[in-house]
Image 1 (spheres, rainbow, N blue to C red):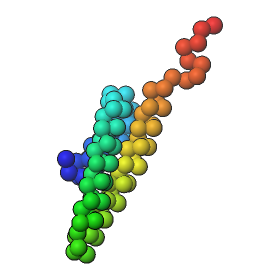
Image 2 (image 1 turned 120 degrees about the horizontal axis):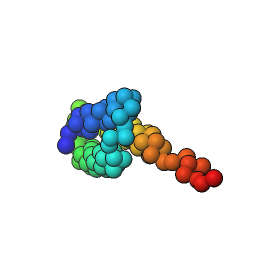
Image 3 (image 1 turned 180 degrees about the vertical axis):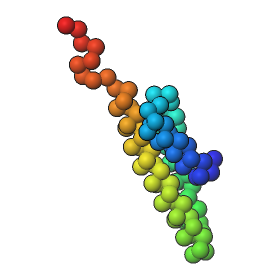
Image 4 (image 1 turned 90 degrees about the horizontal axis):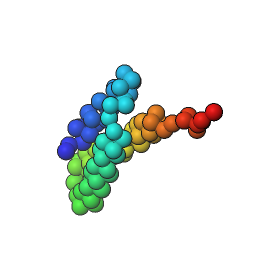
Length: 95
């Protein structure tokens, strides 16, 4: 999947969070996108190491910056979703 598709997917999750429909998706979906972003990050680092052309290195570094930014967004989103699904400490306690 291209980096643009990962960004679009995270944007969709953020929009759903803002609309209050975040409960409709599973945190594992975000974790999967995050895992794919980490794989893309590794791939970009390998390409940068193999490339000699300065222009291509610059493009790849820009993509790497985007990937790392999206990983941070996925972390934040995952935290926000799991906090919503975690019951309060006193919730469910009997009288």
